[in-house]
Image (cartoon, rainbow, N blue to C red; front, side):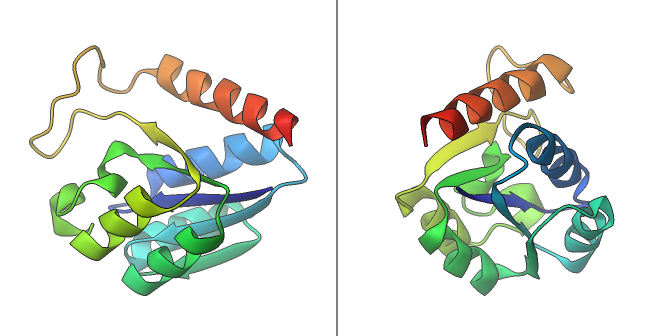
Length: 137
């Protein structure tokens, strides 16, 4: 199974996702793409990605082969994450045939109803869903 994790800013969520997904899907091929070098470096420090890359083109190319795309809700929204998500990146995520597991966050002038900031339950729910997807394959 090819899983793509996309994150920006400081890459803290991406690193958490990477570590959590590796635990529940040890055989998955995991690619981590940062929208900036700091995010990529933070995910690299997790030490459990199969491939790492940085930038717009890396997001676009990785979305073509991913079976599951995981990241904050903003990766599918143009100009999100303080402008780090370009329209081309958001389009690549949104138009990919991959299944998307988007983590809702109330940041960057976006309010997602029903979401409490920093809720660990959201991450646990996402991991349970990814585990179910991996078991189907």
